[in-house]
Image (cartoon, rainbow, N blue to C red; front, side, top):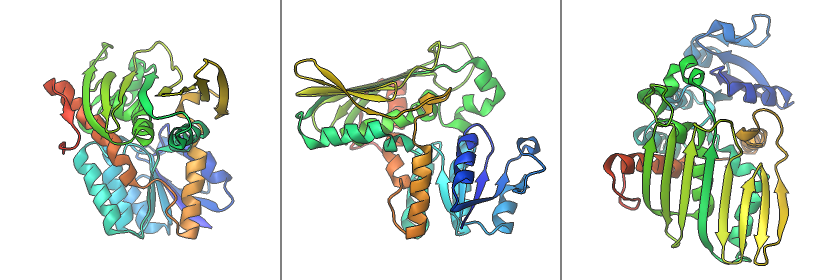
Length: 336
């Protein structure tokens, strides 16, 4: 039985908790949050206001970190230093310095596993799209598009002010709502040569971070991609990802993968079968959590290490720098 703890009982922990508790190989031993009202006193699961006390007093094998962004990197380091594996919600840090430190920590302690929650890589649609692209059956990529059009009301930032503060969140719509889309774009499209981006605030919320971002991505393989994300949409629309190949067009929309061939005929290729009000979160938290723990049991590395999150964080930083300077950022030379 793998003994598990959770640090942070905010919105995303509500996704993790039922998955952990439903797994007969996992035992949720303890949770921690600075707000005592986040947990039921009658629960058999131990509650701690101070996460360090939990780490020191409980015999934990792993911890899920579901905290505000600015705590992700330092708390991960505290866990690893105590010999506790980590399942880390995105993002892995709020800046490239923190990101590099975690990647370095992972290299120095190869026996310790830090799984980064880029769960959309495990969506059936994402996997199938990547396989179709890599098969070469439809030719090479000639273009790509990623679109995230979501809605976040003023109350979203008022309720948790850290979300609108740059030094606590690391950014807005890019790092919080659309990092998965940026990750999938580079995961499928490959290495990026240049980025030109623009950030803005379309909403009058008085926050420091961007609510809208757009960028042109030039990939090493000679094609370009368009990225656009906003929290100013009137509702949470489905994320859209499109890959245009020489002989076909692949589109993920409403969590369904479609393929249009040269004759314009389209077929439904794959369906993630996502339902509920949080459909836009994706389908694969459960898959990734199970994959991580199978890796712990078998001592295999078939999860998503934090090093795999480096490129999407570099993309976010480069888009921000491009917006600030008005210049195209060369990713081969860019170090933040």
